Image 1: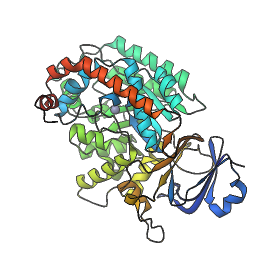
Image 2: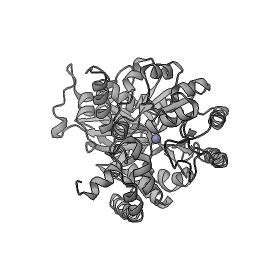
Image 3: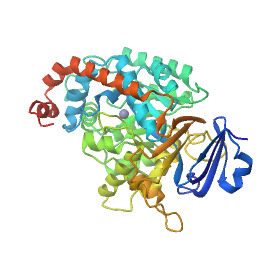
Image 4: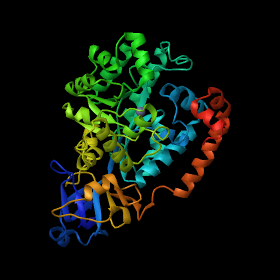
Length: 478
Ligand SMILES: [Zn+2]
């Protein structure tokens, strides 16, 4: 007997090289585990009497998406950081709001981001930020999402970054405190909520900490058999800093100090030459690409296809933050990633839909070290899965054999509202498009109120910073 039985669907298992589709397929779940995957007629007799039975006729069943690099705590400044020169993004659009954002605001923003993500099919969020212990307790665990969390570690404090054209001032005591907090967080939370919470180290970026301290953080991670998730070559601000301090580029610097290996998860990596991407790949660095966010913030297509073509071992994707790409929606992210990379390489065969689905599921899970437990639909894995309705105008027609259009339609047409059911760790978190663990109306109401509080408090700083966006707003252009 099973607890959940999903039947009659197009099951995209992600087994094998492609999406591993089973037509008229079924999945049985017991507790938080998948116990059987196969043809409906083979499984129905044994599992058909499950407590919850979902008829997935005309629907696709996929592993839930792994959003591998996210800052949901920034969700309340959605739409308030784009269309500015990259050098202005952090200092003139993010910082003014950041100074007036309270911890409680960040939790409200995270809750909103998680709600958006889960409703559009994300089951695992790789969140990086501050105060992860309280965030895990107040936000991530109650939301029901699978969370892979890290406290950001850097040596940045007040007054560190007054002038982007001078070396940032580092504060070792701040770094040591953040490292200590990170270790305490990992000791308390790794494996919590029946394994639904896992943790990692996150040294912020090469321009945010000294060489000695960066290597110290990596060593702390390695001693515990854990990986380090770090922003690498994330744009012009970092490039200026690394050049000022070390007279080279980020990737060359990290290679010179022996930082690059298979325990490193590099996010972004877009301020790079083709040779540097090949170097990252050859060192075994794992890659998380955030194409929509980087496209909007930097005007650059991150090298996802190039990294894979260079022999990179494992790549995933992230929605990054609402003040960049404006969403936490992996269905949208897949299309943007495919499109931007096709254009970067002027080659429409780059990153086909089936590959995008793998990067958003099994390969993303492998990249962040969770590939043994999630990312595909097979017995013995955690029951993280989503059901998408294909019988809507923009997903029609459904053609499955021998011509196939389901994977391309999910990547190129889906927008999130096809996601009917979301199951995480064996629990139904979204049913018939309704979130069960979060009160959607309340989440939106609180987010609206908190965002207005932040904007009201930050308005003078924001306008005084005089970003291109602030000037456009003053003129009434948007
Ligand atoms: Zn980031």
